[in-house]
Amino acid sequence: MPSRISFLKAVYSKPMPIIVTAIFIVMYYVLFQSITSISNQGLAPILTTPSYLIYSLVLTSAVLLFLSAYSLKISLYNIRSNLGSGISVGSTVIGALIAGCECQAPILSIIMYNLGLNSISVSTLLSFVGEYETIIIFVLVLSNILYIYYNLGKMSSNCMIKNGNVVAKKSSLAKAGKKKWF
Amino acid sequence: MEMTQMAQKKSISPMRSAPASSPQTRQLESRIKTLSYLTYASLIIAIAAIAIGIFALVNALHAQNPTNSTNTSVIFGDTLAGINQPLNSTQLSIINNASDSYFEIAGQMLLNGSLENIIGAQTNITSQYKVDNKTSIIYLGSTTCVFCGENRWAMALALSRFGHFSQLFAGYSALGDHDVPTLYWVRADINSSQVDLGSHYTSSYVNFIAIEDTGPITGAFYLQPLSAIQAQINATGNSTYMGAVSKIIANKNFAGTPYTIWGNYTVPGADAEVFGNQQPNSTGILPIVYMTHAQILNQFATPSNQFAWSEYAAADLYIAMTCNSIGNAAPICQLPAIREIEKIPRY
Image (cartoon, rainbow over all chains, first blue to last red):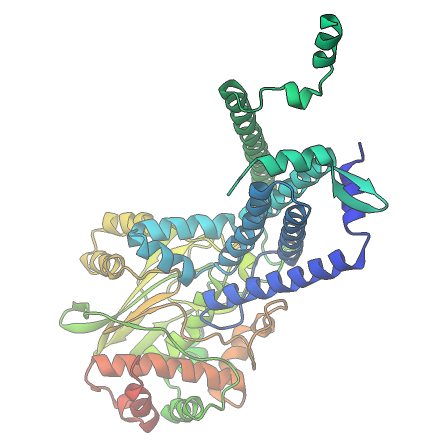
């Protein structure tokens, strides 16, 4: 059975996946900057999160989104594909809300106040997020990587590489076809 | 014949012979699915716990080697030179005796859009907190916080129009939060987490109620929850500060620091981002980090660049809010620029 790395290479052996992933990277970076900027009341965000973590978050989210969409394209694991997409978007949004946090977190605060929390609860959460901001983003990057690993594992057990292309095995297609996830 | 037919039946593919729709099979599949999700969730939690443990260990090791003047392992600035030193009389005079004309010029620059830095506050209207029948200006911040560090310069300039500082102290935001030179209202505890109250400010127009949360200045941004801050204030028995923190909590718009109340106006955040002569670049070191306190004050003494004018303009916003709250009782309220700013709804 080809390894996960082989499948990753096979997926990205063509220019289109690379182009699409690059577009996702740009999209996620813009999303990240927009959210941190809004958190900063429209001003340039002053970040303390290490840049390499931010770039890692954006990169892994983009790759995860692409692989999730790719799985959907080859008719595999509909619910897991959407879960992967959700994780990639969620981790970027959460990362942006937290990275732009530091001393102030107007977006997070508004959400929490609207959920009915009081100032004490909001400030407690802000203190926690402010203190563990870098660790939380590190965990988000890790969760992206883990889901990419999981996605590739499923791909390797249910697909094959044929003429440099990744194609689903017939048995997997049959199984996916029988299961109506939506 | 029957044996052959039976053999043929047995050779039918496993998929056709498997009871795919039996309840037992569906239950088994569901259990396997749940188990796989649980396994992955456990794996994620375990890796996260290991990561947190590693970070905590690294931080603990770092805390054992406190820095005095330089620390090459921090991301931003690396100086705490002169921290907690009181401003000398000349430096204090720059704040206390700044010319009203500077506030007027800066206000006009703000109104005609000729400032490079972005100045502007999101405000909410609130009822006034009065002590001794005077309007109160309440400040809640953190010594470690970069925005508080930037904001105190504008606050000091604004407050100087309504009163007088007998002392101010050189300070910095945390080394891990941009190490921005700033002012402290009192000598700050820079090693531990506690709440510093008060200032060396007097005024016949307003009360200045300063609540400063402190944390290790060599670390990163740190802020205690409001509940902890309130508990420490309540322990002092000081009714003025107890009332002030209760008012902050009751406002239900605390979103971090700095948090200020200027009479009728709450400002949940800094009213500007003035770190140099233009808007800051999020990936670079803030220009103000390279300035000493003396250099900053000299720029205030004879403002001639965007940085200085922006700080005066940021102060103008606070002045306008205060003037609106005290019925324009102070002389500074008569400046044309202040009058114009007062007309803007959120000020």
